[in-house]
Length: 362
Image (cartoon, rainbow, N blue to C red; front, top):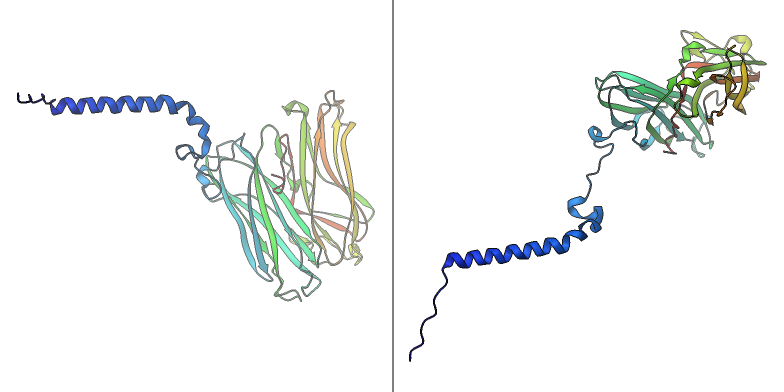
């Protein structure tokens, strides 16, 4: 008896059955694999974060809770060149405040000619419109084989949202000295630190420039902080003093005059003590207690002539203070024999509640 042909399933039914089988398989995969997806971590292709940083300034934020951002470049300078280094950008929202701290570490090479190299540095920051909103710098004569760090800082407050730019100008202009043609390196860095709460930059024009004769002690900066303005019980101060010893009249010019008179000059330079103080002040305006006092003795010699001196302190305010204010001050006691000039330009003092690290510490 001939075999009877089997009935054929319609093509549409075959396709539908296949689709249902595939769907069931996909559901099974999702159920089994899904719980393990998070264990792949951020290295998985779909979860790898997009990197941001100085090369993407529109996404580099310096908001209140952001960590410090550091911009660094090892620059090379040949006397008498000028170079720009460590250019970078960051964003701020209107009303936000940051401290921009700049450090330049360098030295005159041991095998270089001449006694010293004059070096000037200047950090310049601009707002979204391109207007300069802050500068910080200083000058120093580099001595052979003596490492130095030129350190300064500036407080910025954003008047509008946008991208802010900063860069460091390095200058060794003396083409007439024996050091002309010397090449040296400068580790140039600056850090942007958001600051919350109290943050004030004391105007240098209140007391500077000044000449401190031998045997005299002067206050270069002072800031009174009401304790009622502190959200936390700590304070930090950063101060930089741009100094010139009167081993000659040259180099002491500011505001159209020289600040070293003939009677101020002594080629032996200036031995001096820098004192930083944070004192409690009572209702009567008198100091009732000291929170912190620090002293350091230094000598500014003839061939160095210029110095950018940096000091900083971080203190905790007593839980039960004797006064209602803190006076933050920086004093210089010059024993001479040469008089000592403290320039207004490139001298600064900033007091904050937020702890502000130097670029190398951020």
